[in-house]
Image (spheres, rainbow, N blue to C red):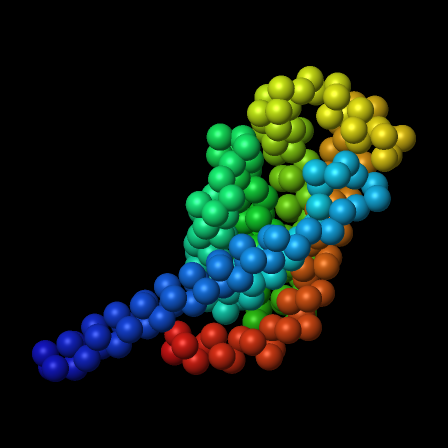
Length: 210
């Protein structure tokens, strides 16, 4: 009986090590993907889409929402270590919350219904939740933090938005006409890519944590 217990403990230990290694690998891939940013015509230049949430979402679906949040945290910490911060960590913390707002609801729903329909439903809910959270955090945390970090008045940031989108005239319209479309588009693109690649990648990851 002691032998069985020792074997079980050893197996769990190996599984945990593999799981942590995979989380680190997915976080590292996410950091690399953060380097490839795409500017958008309806938002200021500092809003650029990247696909760093794709590996996080894959890990979230494979290992669960807690692991997904861990990968998101590792991604932020790695990026901080490599590139530093212009907002004393405020922007990175907000980005962590926004990323989790997408992946955690999606993973929770998928965990309850592990079908393609469950994955799609989860990502739709996650995208909608991320959009709401993103608008709130940008309006009350990120934009004020950026303005303070770069010594700019809020009117200057709003003016940058107005220069590319005439509908932007205030902080509220900035959130509605720049932040919301940005998050909706990002959530949609990440979801489509994950749907296309998940079945091909997930067996490899599942083998590693089995």
